[in-house]
Image (cartoon, rainbow, N blue to C red; front, side, top):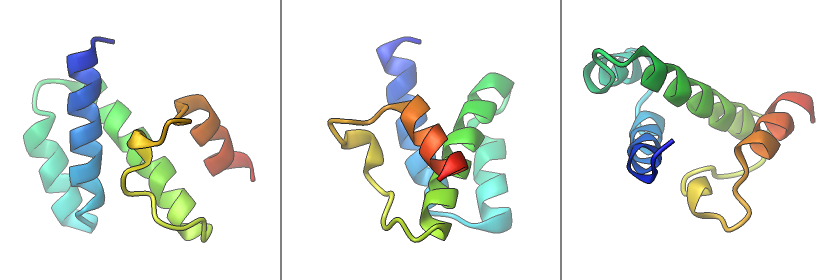
Length: 81
């Protein structure tokens, strides 16, 4: 993945987290038009962030900026703890 694509994904995930329900779906429809793999990646990351919030692990906004951000570790934490 290029650094530019990763930056775009991070921005879009943050944008998705700012919306709920149908507003989130509409946002993703607009920003991911013609790129189903982008939508899948964003939906997976938003889902992980949502699970972290539901589990009471605190605020997830800005989690990409953490020095220890690791997508695989985040996925395991969100799914298995």
